[in-house]
Image (cartoon, rainbow, N blue to C red; front, side):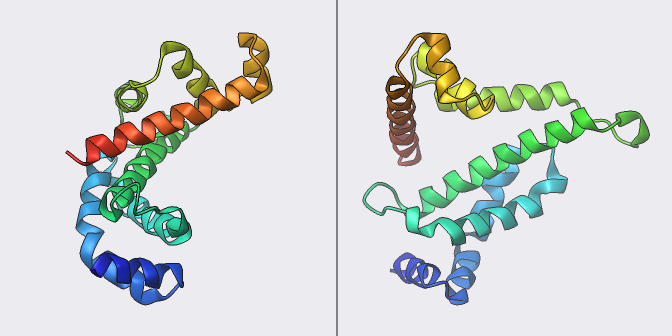
Length: 177
């Protein structure tokens, strides 16, 4: 019952909904982010804030028939943390580590991201995994992928759409355990 009221407030952009969300789920969101960020504890607070903002901005996308609110916010927290890992790796590659007083093993972070990605994509065929990686990670256009794979553009869109549905279903099943 508390979730329904909270969601109703957030959809109406009433701050009371966020207060209830923070009271009820802040520790869960923080623990999910902490788990997925690993050694990047400096980004934890910022990632939690971005997760809360994403919930506020995207609550209309929550469908109670497909998932529980708790699982939905955990998924948002997980993917925000993964985004932070990627963003952090890009900063390391751009900045000069010799000028800084600390050392982070960027290869370890890359391995962590790759493991999480493999875990998420494990439900797809090898061909679909390649399309997902090229489109979502390498920012290649659907047209380029279709031309390279000798597929119709609509086929690439269909593979992406079916893949997202398959991943969503598998994540919901894992979250319900």
